[in-house]
Image (cartoon, rainbow, N blue to C red):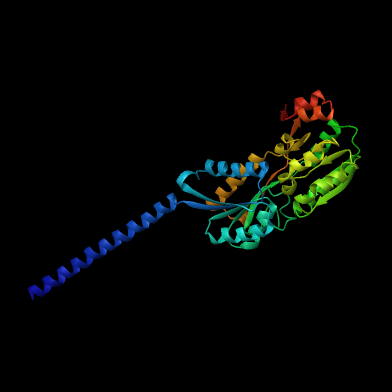
Length: 335
């Protein structure tokens, strides 16, 4: 009887010991997973539409913005792809980035964001510098996007650009707007620019190209009919801006692009939104999503105030005398 009772007690003790060990083991695993969550490497998929200095600056800014929020070194893995302006690659790469199990996706330029949006309705997408998110059917509303997409929008400061055109080249009457017919955001910008320009007393002639192959021939026609050339935020034109400049060598028309890098490459001047700042804001937005914010409830951040950039060297080549006040007010003067 005593032996039986002893066996029962020993059995109960064994159960308690084993149970305690099991609880300790499970507790340890639970704590370990929390530690893993904190220190886990996040995966960020980035799709850039094409290579040119402005978009490259945005990508650099994205990396800096993520790093400022703690996502750097072994805490992040960036899955970067560049479609090089090929729409078929946009579709293929978008699907690949989705299937690569990235935690958040970033689209640099409108076609990239649209490609990612078509590839997934579940994974969070952050727009990197999208001029017209609503018009591009990426979000329903800028304040409350309502889907799996939010991000940063660069609204071209067209009114400021027109004021600069009038100040630097007061004799300009007709402006040629050169843009890509394949980019939705460019069409929207041209519509706004044309409306504001006509209100300011200018005449605007539109010249659209389906690809970079038609830029030279279009420039040859346009330069004979306009007094100045304006270019919106347009990735197709930006990627072949050297062709725009070389095609204008004999005509010597002042060119007003919408990016600092293009002014540096041969434009006369512009009022621009800082591309690196756009990238930093995009990176910080992605970090916000990684930390738990929901895209559908996160308002799109809008950049619409620009700084003037003037190329003194180009002005000299064109025989244009630059007003002192314009140079003093400029955010950047290229000598």
